[in-house]
Image 1 (cartoon, rainbow, N blue to C red):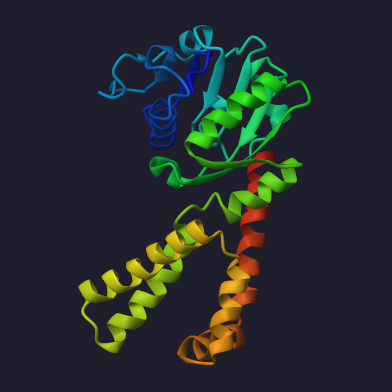
Image 2 (image 1 turned 90 degrees about the horizontal axis):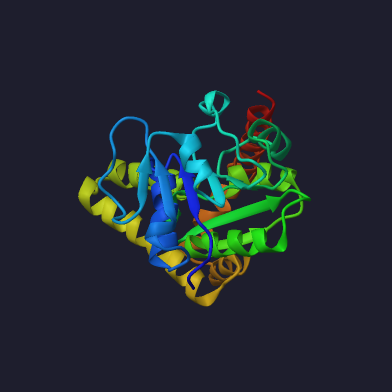
Length: 263
């Protein structure tokens, strides 16, 4: 679909801003001539036909929708008057009320895409302020459908939780893969064989879950039912505190997201 809005991405030269721009352009959500992106020092050679600038206010003035794709710690120094336009934040932790107050608008959407936006496989939860319109919501759905899968959630608390759960992108599967690979190498496999084995297990699993829309719990239960080597491994991991460690990690991420919003 070709949308009838002009999209400005503050931080468009960065990895996430560029990934979202690329996904939206590839899906035809927005035309190149309707995209403006800002950079800090060196103008990137990307997205032919789009407008690049190092002036964030100029970007905002020529855009209908302004996306903030900067690091949360850099946001306090960002000077930009949105003049009542829709502002979409992809920053972790920063609250809707603070964004609206700082950028002079009551139309704010807070989102949390992840690294898989680069390959149009991100999960993006989002929530809109009460003044955001249905047209605003349609635009948000279009942009983040282009990046993968999106859900409008019920509260900013949900976003804070999902910042840890899905905002991690590949980090948690990679964390598990790293532990598996270390064990394989310690057993005596070559690092190259261990890496290929572990990476293929994870990518194959993701593809199966996507195609079959399978429940992870059902998948685990099926393997436990076989009472074979996988069941022995899962039961031992659980006895060692695997479930509790995951819960504690997600709780820590949730608290960190809240703390970032208060800073």
